[in-house]
Image (cartoon, rainbow, N blue to C red; front, side):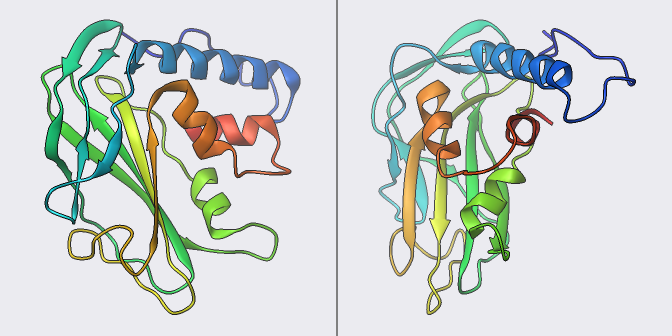
Length: 192
């Protein structure tokens, strides 16, 4: 199932209301077809402290088809690029209908003169993939005296870790730290 429901002509300029509405509609269609349904995954730190788990059964949809994931300890094993001091990284936590875990790392990014490092990460979110539901996210932020190496360092130990459940509420909380950004920029960051 394609996640793009509407398209726009190339002549519709970026930043216009028409283009923003098409991007918004496609974002909502993609979130509606690839999301947790009735229960949040209750994302949290795994038994192995460098891994991530679900703390409850999570029914979800992938491309409009219902699936379910039982409570799973150490479900996601993250790796990737290390965060230096004063940086943030976001790990988007996906699952296929067959129960295969995957993730996408966004960042690490440092702050700019006008945006926090978390806001820079959020502006660089990748498009939501077909064939996977976003069950949650992990945001790891380091202070001026901290670093974080995914897969080696435990989230929340010597750094600040924030877990988000997937679906509309989780995306709302994750995107909630953006201020002063045009709606199309936010939505384009989410859906590409």
